[in-house]
Image (cartoon, each protein chain N blue to C red):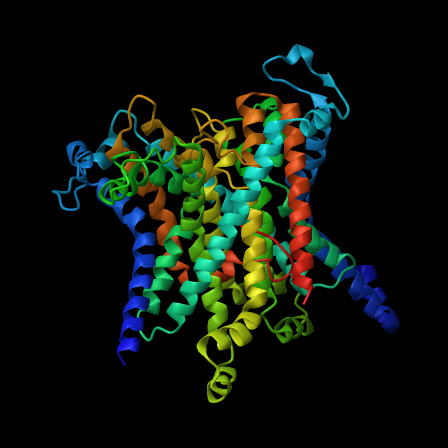
Length: 305
Length: 279
């Protein structure tokens, strides 16, 4: 306190003293959160990269040891890795496209409604606040269980016959894609509806006076103005779909066989079901690399005009 | 005129179909949770039946009660929320309002931490927590939950701190108030609304988390999202009870979601404006 008063008396130093005090105050405020973030994200990342260079098998600890890049060499020759990567890409691309297309279509329809918008805003909240684990459980049982589930009941009545929705490899993949799309389309819908509502009205007036058709108005005005919001939704949903876990784990567990095993799930199963922590770590690092590559591409697209 | 009428009906039909698709699985779970075992298994499915609260009585007070799991879920979600807020509010204030070197980098770091897939966090932490005996403990789960709740809370709060006018703080400094006092007495009351919204979302995300919970839970600490699996097995599924548990797991987040309705878009897209981020 003493030298603080002394410093202030030198009026020229005042600015510098205040700046230093502001820095110290900022450091004190940031310290707890940054220590926690370092401990729960950066530190595990380094640890993960470390374990990915070890043979570490909880079932056979006697064979553990440093193996260098061995796990990564195995990975590159591992068919199950490549197939899980392909499944990840199919799952991500299809769920994101479906969410954005359906969400945008619905937002455009609801935007024109004179009454009842409030209903959509409330109901759209329901799926997105639920735990993906609960959503998965509900779909697995009450919606998709053979004969008992409503979807199967509808399929039987539509003359398609009872289907093994989660037991057939192709249908299982379709099912997990539908479940993810069901839960997250409301997200795209809400974000796009909000940005539609913020678009300037007078541009549309002008377009109407120029007798632009509805399709022209959509292509030439709405879509370009919505582009930032659409790109944002695509980026956010891609990141989530790549690391989707609960809704697949609870519904199919990655099966039948490995039909719905996205890379994220493969890393989990390898580590915690087959107990090969070292190789599982290498798979997790691979997932991180894929995530960074894909988000790099998406951010480049966002900047490009 | 007729074309227009047809279009209107088509639009109405499509939008109603969407509404129905979103509501139905949830409503159907609620209906099934109010059925007797024979009503649940009836074919064709019964829309009208005599409701019973028996499934709820069974799952709450029966032999395999999920009350302890609900308690686990609440302890984890509340613990995560409290600790997250204590750390995130000061950090967000500093990032939004103070001048210091490396500020841009600090903000970027908070966003970048979210690139790390959760499975990459849980593998090392499983090994570490096992060594120090923290598997199946509240402190273990809450610690790991900070990895996703902190970046989220910091970025959401920054957006609220940025909205307050600078003049308020300057006036307080000129009156001779210390920085801490200004933050506590002048700034925090201004962002009360933002803090409430953040609390809702942090609680919601902690309640819903599954991957970390499934790896770290045991007989002592097992949140309801994991305990649900007790009602479904290869031999048999306890349909009505499973429905009751699902409804109990949904109830708190649905209530919070509707309470936070107006802020939900902001909560869901936090951080996105600045760069990346995800829920």
